[in-house]
Amino acid sequence: MTIIVAAILPETIILAADSKRSASNGKTFEVLKVRAVSRRTVVAKGGFGDLADSIWTAIDGLPEEVRCNPLSLAHHVHRIGATIHQECLSKAKVAGEGDLGLYIFIAGIEEDDNAVLVVVDAGKGQRKEYRSSGPTEVTGMGSVPDALRIAHQAAQAVSDSNEPLPAVDWATEAIRIGQANDPATIGFPGDLAAVTAAGVQWVKLSAIIR
Image (cartoon, rainbow, N blue to C red):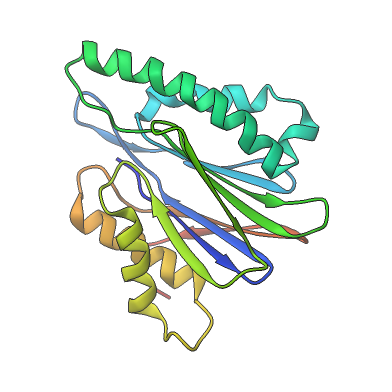
């Protein structure tokens, strides 16, 4: 399973995820669930494990001008994701498994230098946009149940409502809660990307809150 959380802050989008993946033989290993697809755009993917990794190949095959524009990229990912989700669902049914969903987060900088986040739920055919010009907001989604609740619970645990959200501590706490709920498939280290007009900064998250 996967937990992905995002925070929409003034002039910044925070995107973070755990890195644990379980193989069919019961062994676990690390994978990168948050990736840069251009200098100004970062994507996170959760759901169906390696069955849905073809989404990365599809994104890499898009023109650079699409990958550099988060809203244009979200438009293409919405369409591509629906097809990949159906393919994964068919394979899962053959294997006697259920629908793990397919969730894609796109965080990037528009041409006017405003940060934007688009969350695509490919299984439900839904998408939602968030802009850094609005109020501070946190969200979460993934194959782990209650990811949205976990994102809010983590925010309450590490910050006062009157203070800026400490992004690293918040994302670390969210992954810790997810791991406590499902230690077999969610775990550290985590990866955090902070997307601003100046570029993308990366932080490797450990289990100890700093």
